[in-house]
Amino acid sequence: MKKSKDIKAFNILSYTVVTLIALFCFIPFLIVVMGSITDEKEIIANGFSLLPSKLSLSAYGTALKEPMAILRAYGITISLTIIGTACGLFIVAMTAYVLQRKDFKWRNKFSFYFYFTTLFNGGLVPWYILMVKYLGLKDTYLSLLIPPMLSVFNIILMKSYIGGIPQALTESAKIDGAGDFTIFVKIILPLIKPALATVGLLIALGYWNDWYNSMLFINNENLYSLQYYLYKIVNNIEAYKTILAQNSSAVSGAIEMPSESLKMVLTVIVTGPIILVYPFIQKYFVSGVTIGAVKGW
Image (tube, rainbow, N blue to C red; front, side, top):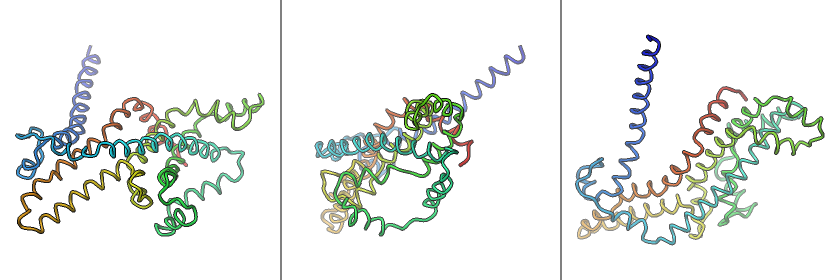
């Protein structure tokens, strides 16, 4: 009876703590949502709040002033996320599988090469010259697709997970006549679903949040990613407000521009799809992070 009461007390305490933590995590996003529908003058006067006294959808009207441009940017980002995540997962998993194979005599040399790139790199200018001059990827879809595809951190995480698979499985498959690629596709991949979900989410978030490559390589508005397109909207609003503020007769017009609420609107537009996707892969993500964290390179 005493043990049963202790368990109930522990459960009540645990649920209470988890609920409070969940609220602390949810409240900032709720502030963002409420800020997106708050009147700009209300934000300037009183700041952001959970219960604004005056609501307005003018910021949404500004953000969606050109709906086709938003949809086009969404299409670019969604296609990059889907294609890049699929290709990146396959390449990362294959690389990690090869590096953890004990019968691959150059695995330590290749592992050092990958690790070395996390400590030193050529810098922005050589990378830009390589992408633009030698690879000819200026203003191309590939300039947005290729750079975020491969990450050494993801390779380390995947390699650690694959290292926990018993070698007897691959050895028995070899005895039965299976080739390396067949073993990888039919045995390894089905066993590393948690790691695939974890790394896949990291790669997808990288593509979804990427605006830097668009800023460097893209001048064609039809190839703007969602993040960079929204970034351009905010910059244009701020520049317009600065120009208006320089004219004393236009100060009131500058104040009426919904810049603060617009930032909240753009946050809602950007984070919405990821929030809807995350619950479906949460269990795999937690499992993959936990197992990958306790294994070494």
